Amino acid sequence: MLKGRSLIEPMDLTLEELDEILDLADQIIAGPSEFADVCKGKVLGTLFYEPSTRTRLSFEAAMLRLGGSVMGFSSGESSSAAKGESVADTIKTVACYADIAAMRHPKEGAPKVAAMNTDMPVINAGDGGHQHPTQTLTDLLTIRSLKGKLNNFTIGICGDLKFGRTVHSLIKALSRYENIKFVLISPEELRIPEYIREEILVRNGIEFKEVERLENVMEELDVLYMTRVQKERFFNEADYIRLKDSYIVNNEKLEKAKKDMIILHPLPRVNEISVEVDSDPRACYFKQAKYGMFVRMALIMKLLGVEK
Image 1 (spheres, rainbow, N blue to C red):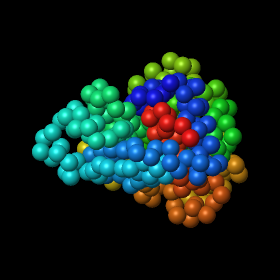
Image 2: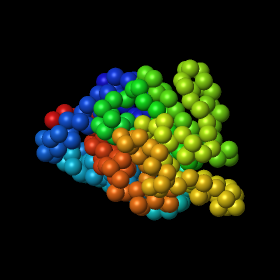
Image 3: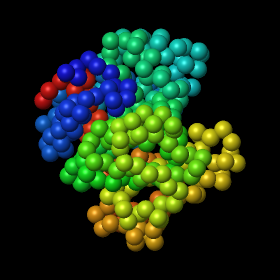
Image 4: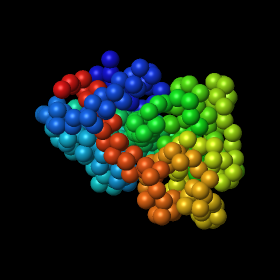
């Protein structure tokens, strides 16, 4: 039973609960009009201490399409955090007005602190370089919808694997499905953190390899998950400038790829996927953004305990 619970990281959900959310998302996709009023009278608080386009707007669109209302802020400067208010006090205040909250915060663990200080469901919409569970739900729904399964495939994850919270969440979630092989493509400086490598991949006996060149492994991949090299995660701008163009997908590189491979990206992209790729049928990142709204609709319904 998901009603009343918070979602801080993907491992908060069992495989059965993940499937429950994805199955409901499929129902919404098949007949969105049937869900137009299920959250009438409910309010979602969007507490975004960091900039966001897709995540914030998809949460808002999800609640509005369910018939609910939205309130919140889109930067820490426009909230009482600018005056020094704690996350605990903010969430207690928001809980006076809202039924559920989605929080993005630059500090790792902030949404967990919020969840510990309220009975209202709190959804982690991204905390620092840590976790991003609703992006993971989006990724799982996209892969399942387009490939027809969440097992028996090879996924290449490319770019900033050290700071990329979407990457950490996705590896954790996919590690629970059968026969997933990971190809981790990054510069030496941006390899996945030791705890992901040891506690998730090595401990569970999951097949993976770490490489530096995308073109050397392109033909092996069923899914290519691109990420941007995030300037805001670097302490040294010189390192960012040196690495930011390390990996760019273009038509030439895709000549080696399988015809039914899918290309995903949590967005925003900078230049890591050339715009010439957008017209390739394997480019699925804008479809992925739309799936994000549907899966957030399903998640909101489950955490609020509402049904059509």
